[in-house]
Every structure is written in structure tokens, then in C-alpha cells.
Amino acid sequence: MKKTILSKLLFTLVIGLFAMTNTFAQTTNTNGTYDAIHSVLVGSEYDYNVVLNTTGGNDNTYTWRVLNAATNAEIEVIATDGSNEQTITWSGAYAVNGEKVILQVEEYGDHGDGKVCSQISQIEISFTTDLPVIAFVTPDHTLCSTEGTNVSVKFNGLAPWDITIVDDKGVAGKVISDLNIGDTGLSAVDADGYYTYTYSVAENLLVSPDADVVHSLTITAFVDDNVRKNAGKLNGDLTGDIDVDITVYQLPQISTINHN
Amino acid sequence: MKKLYLLIAFTVGLVHFAIAQDQQVTLGTSDDYSVTAVPGYTYTWTVDIAGTSTDVSGVTGNLINILWDKAEGTFNITVFATETATSCISETETISVQVLGQSSVLFAAADDAQTCSDLIGNVAGGGASGGSSSFQVQFTGGLAPYELKYKILDPLDAQVGPEVTVSGLNATASIDVPNQFINEGAGNAIYKIVIVSGTTKDGASVDIATDVADNTRTITVLPKPKLTGGITF
Image (cartoon, rainbow over all chains, first blue to last red):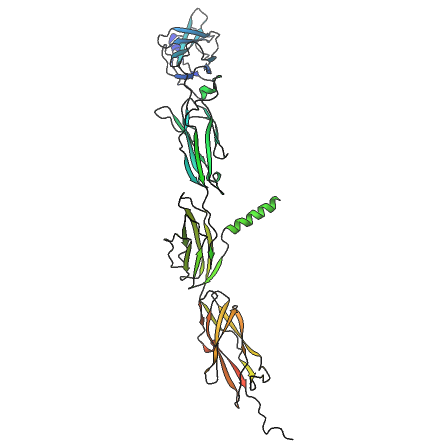
């Protein structure tokens, strides 16, 4: 039975990403337009997929292409193997800081009678060589022994993030793994694209029974999803304000109450 | 070893905090309370206002004087130090003070005494003479030990000698009055032992029972037997 072109036009292709939290909006069949942008670090490797669609034809094969974002001209055919999944390392000649390309997937449905219909879905890929940056928001400050405090860091980049803060006295540091949007302690993104993460250091950890103690905190590791998927990068930008000192004052010493 | 450590830790924890009472005082007395002064520290004191009319809210030094003038009971005094340079505060120290009520005293038993007259020169005249007459007293309230003063009145109610002070008395005690009385008369001589005053350990006055039966005891001094006519031979 012939299937109408109209029914084919009603297909919905969805582009998703394996094992990632950077999900993009569901696209409808719109040739030449895209409604999702993936900002990638040059050299990073990502897995892409479209949902395997079993309607509208018998073969459901896929062709993956890279197009010029300005002209839609084809730059590269990544694959014509019919797979709905592709792993792409963005290291081609077109992967230049500040430039953009379109990643296009075309699905074909061969009806076996000589008629092959297709639909496309695509997203914009923008390239950057800028590493995500991180810095302490918390300034150097002082506490009385047994007071707690909050420590805040500000950063950009793509979720999820891994952050390691080391305290040279061993109590006020933090290892944060797979920090994601919506997690406790993480703010909403600000107008400049930065997030702030805050954690509390409990008062019973900051005790100075004998003398004043300086806790020197340092951000030693910072990875966003782009860095994580980039074989050539170990960390984001750690050249900012990545050190903070928290001085904990010894409590005043008071004797027992004497009476006559 | 773990159990011993836990026992020690538990005991140390108890010592740090106030136990049932750290001090006892008598209602109406005042006391100084202090902590060791440290330069650069100010001190914040609080006292249960149910026990005292003393206002310590403005005190910043390491010493206060509290007049326990309001009620019997147990009241806390707390203090903490603030280091001026850092605004950090110390742990709080607390003591618990038990205020004991007004004290009173009376003779506790019906133990009027009798003795023989001394001979001339305060030589023992037999019987209880040469010894002492013992009288039970009972203190209630206030802080022991107590001090008591009594006087001796002769049969004409004239005071004999100075008032006598007896110290270190517990709530139930005895005072011993030396039997040094001479009775040259033909009949018995009644001497009175009268409680004059009392004082608690912390200097509060002790109320004296107003009933004579409670504040006075007697020593009956029997007259000396008389020999007449000398020795005949």
C-alpha cells in the first residue's frame, strides 16, 4: 500500500545524545533549519544519535553530513552506513574557534517501488578553543573556632562538571563529581553564562583548640563535559582566582567560676 | 580499653558541666564570683533573676558580687569571654548555687541540768561539779557549720561573766557549759543558760526562738552541805 507523502511529512525525528545531559529540543521535520546548538571544544568527541524510526519505509537508513552553516553547502559526509548513531571527534579543518557548522542527519525510507522518501534533522555545532573557567567567589575571611562557613565557586562550561577543592588542613575541601543543572547547591545560570556552586563547611570541622589555624583552599581540578570528552585536555582554565584562605581563630579560654 | 575510654569521656563530660550544686549559701548573704582575668577579654555574666536582685547585665569584668536576697532554691550563674580583637567567644562556664533559707536555733531537748556547788576556789564539790552540763541545740536552715553565743544569768538574772561563743556546730549539736558555780545559800540556786545569737557559716544571722522554753535552759546548783561545830576531839 502506498503511503502518502503527507504521512511521511508527519514523521518526527529526534536527535539525542548518548550518555549526556545536554539534551536538545525535539525537532520536527524542517529542512534547512535547526533549533538546537551544541557548543563544543575543538578536539572533543561526542556521541550523537537519532531515535530509530520504524515507520515510513522499510529500510530506515541514515546519512550523516557536516554542512557549511552559512551556505548549507556540504563540507563532509561522515557516514552513509545507515546507522542512527555516530561518534564524532570535532577535529577537522572546519573545527576552528568561533566558526559554526551544521550536523545533519538524513533518514531514508525506501518503499520498494522505486520511491524513496527522506527527511532531515540537524543541529548547529559551534566551535571554541576557550576552556571553561572557574574561580572562588568566597573571599579570604576569618572565623571563630567552631563557626561554620560557606564556600562558593563560579564557573561556566557544559554540565556535568567535576570539581576538586583541596584544603591543606584536610577538612574544608570538597570533591564534586557529575554536578548537574538542578543539583543542590548549584545556582541557575546568570546572564553571562556562569553558574555558582556553594557548599557548607560544618562548624564542628573548623576547630582551633590551641592556636589560630589557616585553611588554604585551592581548586585543583575542574572539568566540564567538553573537557571530559577532549583527549587533549585535562582540566579547564585554572589560571583564575583559585586560592582562598580561611583563618580560624582559637576560642578565648575561660576558667571555671571561682567563689569565696 | 574502648569501654574504659568511654567511661573516662563520660566522666569528663559531666565534670565540664555544672553538677547538681556547686555552692550553698544562706538567703540574704552575698558572694563574689570570678574567672581568671585575661588581658583583651571582656566577660558577659548572667544570673537567674529568681534568686537575686543583683543586675549583672552591665558587667564586663571578670568578677561579680551577687546578693542572694530573693528566694530559696537553686540558681545558675553563667559567664563567657569575648576576645576584643577577634570578637570570638569562649565556651560558657556555669555554676549552680543553692540558696538555703533563713536559719534558726533553739534548745532541742528538755535537758535542764543539776550540779553540786563548787567549793571555795572552784574546787569540784562532788556530783556533776567539776564537769559540765550539756545542752542539745538544733539549727535549721542556713549554711552549716554554725556559731552560737550564750550567756549565763545568776538567780537574780544578773549576767555571770562574758558571753560565750561556741563555733563549728552542726545542725544538731551540744553545747557544754562548765559547772563552775558556788552556792553558799541554804537552798538551790537556779542559773539560766540563754542563747544570745547565732551565725551561719557565711555570716548570716540565725533567728533565736522567742519562747523561753526554747531559748533558755537551767542549771540547778545544789547548796554545799554544811559542817558545823568543827572537829571535836
